[in-house]
Image (cartoon, rainbow, N blue to C red; front, top):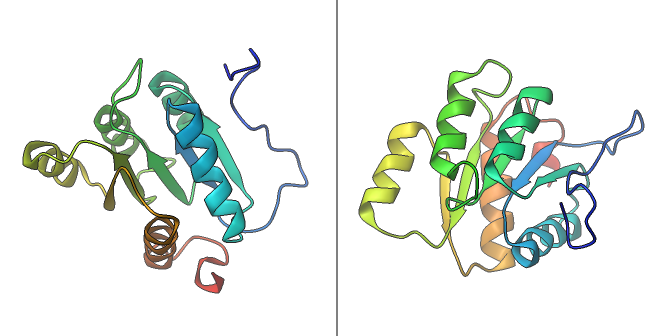
Length: 150
């Protein structure tokens, strides 16, 4: 639920924007909205959001994403568990996954790499770093629509 008590998932309709579909899974509303705003300014308009880990896992089972950006410390499922579940599934197993977190310890980074993370961004982050990592991840994902155009 968002700050207004409404579901925090952005619902897509048949007229969804062109371009890659991105999931932002972040429990902190300010960071979630800031991340979405930065990506929209960079031209990414096809964004869904989840405010906790269980919601992120559910959405990953329902939609095929071109990129997932996820916080490590999420309620109801940690980001590392979301990554592992995604890699075990069929729908999104090859989609790039960027961990966006304040966890900087070597143990966390190693766990994420072992689980198949595509990239790791530490908080606080700049819009330039976020956009560069997103563009880089999408360029590596040959199936992402119009990723090379950004």
